[in-house]
Length: 196
Image 1 (cartoon, helix red, strand yellow):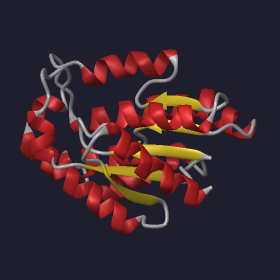
Image 2 (cartoon, rainbow, N blue to C red):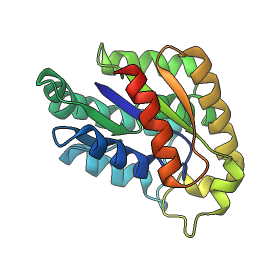
Image 3 (cartoon, rainbow, N blue to C red):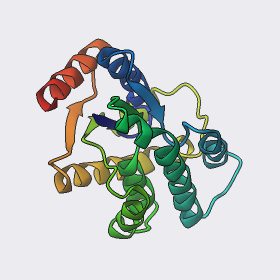
Image 4 (cartoon, rainbow, N blue to C red):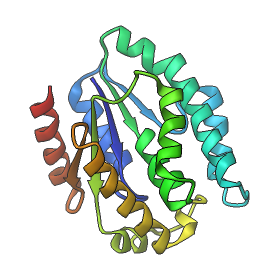
């Protein structure tokens, strides 16, 4: 099963992705986007660098370059072997951040993404919904370009995610991301168990 976790910055995706991968067993592959390959990790450094200004189209293409490499080198071979794959962010982040919040256009970004991923789409996407203001103000330090955009940017991203959840209701399940990590993990496991 290919499962992705999505949500605004500081929604708890990284924590919950790791917990889900552990719960699914030792053969489960835990990945993050961008990253997961040597090329992807280098691209991640560029994309997240707070001192670097990137044109939104350049940003979009970098995300998709890292994604293409991750799919070819890691995800597709793992799925062929029958392994579960859990990924911290994937195609919906690009749609929400670059398509909507950066203003490139949701349909335009989704068309490019379809070209990159082909038929390798998630079986299930867990959208961790948290209040953008609460998430933004609980951060202790800002360590990347997206967090530095401010709370209004995160509100636009959150609204974009809600729209994506409506458009792709067959794949995206909204999970309440508020509360203690154990509570959120239990909610996630309930959803995954229903879909397996």
